[in-house]
Length: 355
Image (cartoon, rainbow, N blue to C red; front, side, top):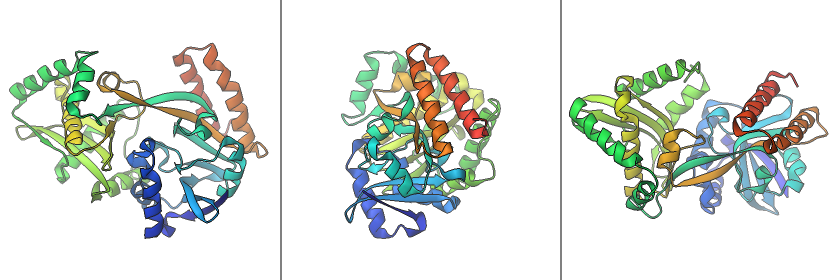
């Protein structure tokens, strides 16, 4: 195994095509976050993005986009905004983790949404979770049948959709709404909702530039979509996500807070699921989390791992190895909430440099 590191500026058409071929070889890599377009967009907004090319002989068998930060710490492309992480192609075994990190010029690599289907990440994780989603390979009607067999959520949502139309006006769905007014309204709703939770949304930095960049991408292979729902002339819900021909990622939902009791956001979600099926997509992925709607409306879940790859001979790597070794046993005697609190505390401590 030989590792070569380049920047996104070095991604010529041949390498981009190789990336697409590797991505197409696994259903687990269907997410738009694994697409070259996502990495290229991040590279236009940040100057610390690199791509590791994993070679076997002269052939590229895998790629891993990553940011290199201080002390040789690596993080996945897009950082906190990236809902899927892993190696595009063939991941090396854990036994070669040190060789991989040395080739990337890293002492450690932190991940929190990595594919558990890749043993390199599953075997080096200390926390497991899932990303619920909608499997549309058998069609939209089959998804409805599966959801209706275990919950009344779709029937309840249908009643709310009819009530929304009666009280607010005839409903109109746009799969992608390019209007500046819709984009501004979406940002305002999302910013205000997160502000109430003490979270800042789209500060004037690279994250705002990234979403603006993605919104402009409307190629067949990759799109940034602002989907909207109107009642009469009034926008009542909006969602920004990214898509490929195979998958739609549910990323930033928002809705008019004055109509929260009518579930306008969930009505929009149902329309998006139907649109994904009509376009022949295999899935709509809700992203990691246990929110009620993700559980009720999903019929699949992809396993994810959180943890680190590290070189224990380096102080940064040794700290992560110690943290991982200490935290793994807690899953046997603590409940999920306690494990999650411990995980968050460890993350904060490492970021703050207290360990």
